[in-house]
Image 1 (cartoon, protein in one colour):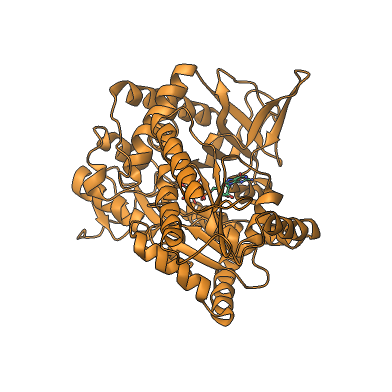
Image 2: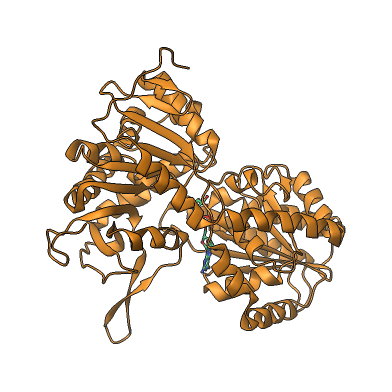
Amino acid sequence: MSVDRGHAAATYDLVVVANRLPVDRVVEDDGTVSWRRSPGGLVTAVEPVMQSHDGAWVGWTGGPDSDEEPPEESGMRLVPVSLSEQEIEYFYEGFSNGTLWPLYHDVVAKPEFHREWWDAYVTVNRRFAERTAELAAENAMVWVHDYQLQLVPGMLRELRPDLRIGFFLHIPFPPLELFVQLPWRRQILEGLLGADLVGFQRPGGAQNFVRLVRQRVGHKTHRDLVYLPDGRTVEAAAFPISIDYDGLAELSRSEAVEARAKEIREQLGNPRHLLLGVDRLDYTKGIYKRLRAFGELLEEGTLDVEEAVFLQVATPSRERVDEYRRLRDEIDRLVGHINGDYGRIGRPAISYLHASYPREEMAAMFRAADIMVVTPLRDGMNLVAKEYVACRESNDGALVLSEFAGAADELKQAFLVNPYDINGMKSAVLDAMRAKPRDLNRRMKAMRKTVKEHDVAAWAAEFMGRLSEARPAHHKRLRPHDSD
Ligand code: GDG
């Protein structure tokens, strides 16, 4: 129960802690400040749980030195954590996105290790932990999110041993052989072990974590449980994240979206096959290799622009990080080259959009596309694959999906590919183009059923349910005789 609501000393039964608050600060032309709910599944996911609890959300506003508190959103208090310009550079762009992000994604780019980045990571994690410790009611549940905040569970446990702490990692958790490159590997593992429940997208992530804890920290483990010397037990498990299936399916059925989907196809010259890619412009998403595969199909004459057009949306992302600038240049060059060689007047082979769009426009693109191409080199889950499926009311359309996306565990009826195998991707695209409508129908129906049944509300309920069963900190579990 909350105490002194609206007062500085108010406390909450449930506290969500994430790098970003679920709202963006918008300054209008006349200088007035407003807050806009930011797109993203996490708010939708935790909204129902938040409404039945008395909830607060702790996060950064996205700008420097701002601790202005936004108004409540969906019944939860939004509590800002302020970052200085230098912390944005060292903690966010540096350690989070220049060290951990590439290290956790199979080292597809080279992680950089800088001691001053690490120091900022510790400082900012401590700020999040301290703010959360002030806000959580006695025995409250705290749900910490993602790679930017891996030290928070441990720091919070020290400040508040009464709390039930859950942590969910949205990105992959790497195998031991890669994780051990990290000079601060021990501190990160100890940070995570502050939680009662550590959630991952795939079972492999949980296994990697438990193996590391056993081999590198020396704790006893049994299957997905870790036994700590103080008698606490930490559980590691997979909770594959999902989308608001019903909400998106409904939007995609609207007349406006249907009309817009038709218009998009017309504007692209009504090709027989419209291929679509939608990604943040990130080197993990495999955009370059995917477009190369398409370019080769045109080069060989297997396809031509009259029959197939590729629409690629690349949402601007992390533009101040060097590696992202380089990627943008490389893709610009490749698209220019393919369009220069194979496009015709009014008919580029690739329609490349470096911009972000409203939800309705995204739904219209999903409805318009015959083949959705999702080929990350590594991805925690990939929500775009699930969103495409939710928009295919007529059970048509094909999904070409990387084996290395978490979504491949559930979307088994997709045309699965190894995104490093350009020939393999070319064949999968051709298979998808040539598949019989009956085959596509069968595949899409099965995938829609999976995503509908396992939507984001189910995901949040499962995680929270498991966390609420976690033993309180003082409760000692019996240890097994053996560990594995
Ligand atoms: C991380 C993990 C994991 C994209 N462009 C626009 C737009 N989007 C939306 C998509 C989708 C979301 O952003 C992107 O989610 P993804 O899952 O594809 O990828 P990440 O951003 O890398 O997310 C990932 C996820 O966390 C959740 O745990 O699945 O593996 O890397 O919803 O539709 N939305 C709008 N306009 C755009 O231009 N409105």
